[in-house]
Image (cartoon, rainbow, N blue to C red; front, side, top):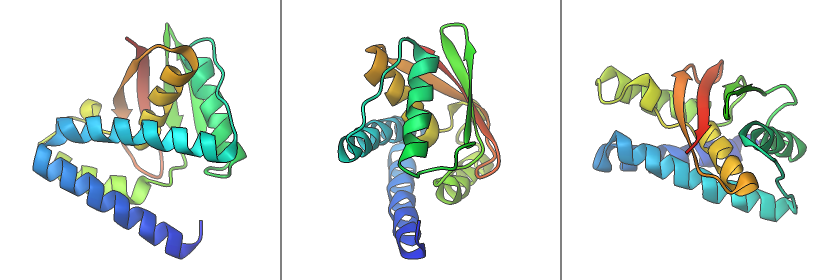
Amino acid sequence: MDEKTKLMTNALLDGAYRATGYILGPQQLKAFVRSFGEVSMEHILSAQGLELKGTDAATAATAWVNAETKVGLHAGDHTEIEADGDGFQATYTDCAFAETCGEILADLISQNLVATEDLPCMRCSFSVAAVSKATGNKAKYKMLQHAPGFRCRCSVNPI
């Protein structure tokens, strides 16, 4: 991503995250990020003429990871998906949202406004959206580890 696009993307995300988080609170921020992820994923798939297929949560998430790689959003080794019962655990080691996410969520954590497992995550939200789109089942996530740009982990389970 070129520097001007990255600057604008981070500015827009920062403004949207901060406005939602500080005005409506951390729980509404997570709902906003989930909805934002769903809409963004649909836009990316439509604009690129891609389709997601998956028979369960883990294969749906893997299909989205492959789509992200195909359109150049992330390097080929950016995500690990590990099936876990009906759901999966995802580990993200490359994230275009790390800068904005790290700053805003660090503020929320330092003010004791949100626990790590309740943090919103755009990458997890994309995975949840992929599960819903490919399988027709809704899903939810919780953060297991939060280290933006290095290693974030979440657990995703159908509901």
